Image 1: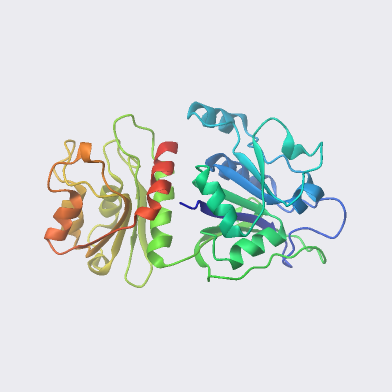
Image 2: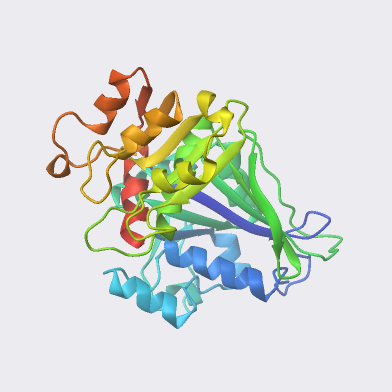
Length: 331
């Protein structure tokens, strides 16, 4: 199973990743640098090209002590695996070879690299550049999410941000310090929205006895009607329950699709109605989920069987199950 790929970069107003001088030009402000550190803490591996190692000499580590400690508490290394794309050797003394995290080198096409990392158990990969690496992964259609930061600077000359492949779909945009962050997703609608639901599970307050689940509800025209996660508003809330409560009797639900990182429950002890009943009552005609509810928690009929019994289309996309489980484990 190939990893979920997040590409992250900052560009100037005129589209450059850096200037033409020998010294690295940092485009991101402090708020965005902290955001990047948070994203690093959430992934299994960080990938750059050999050119970035030669020109920038990055460490590619999680910087914030509290984020490093949180990873260790979950049984992970303090910083993710560092991956350098090269057919040669990394120069001795390069900071990416420091003993603070493991480092490997890989060569090959983007597809071959992702296959190799998937075999190593990498579920979430962050691609940080440089320009050639970003272009190759984008053009190959292998990027699932792009986080593009626009910095209020004019550079004039240097490596440009370019790409190709699948068209991007804007998820959100807004200021981050003095910069502007835009998040894009790629692929078919079901894949885009289900991946987003999986990632929302990371926001769940921790619980030793309940699943961490993310949920997205999308109208027929592609408008996102609502998003949520388990225990967002109340310690007993399921993700679907909270989103549907907030949407009330919105008539667009009658043609909407509900995306959930976990199969909607068919029974529960903490509330009178399981999520399958709530979805049916809301009139939602279609449900897409990544991860089947484990059989230890289900007695017949399952949530999917209950939904299908009343005519609701249920789609299971198991290729997103590793991401759903990975994000649930982080909450």
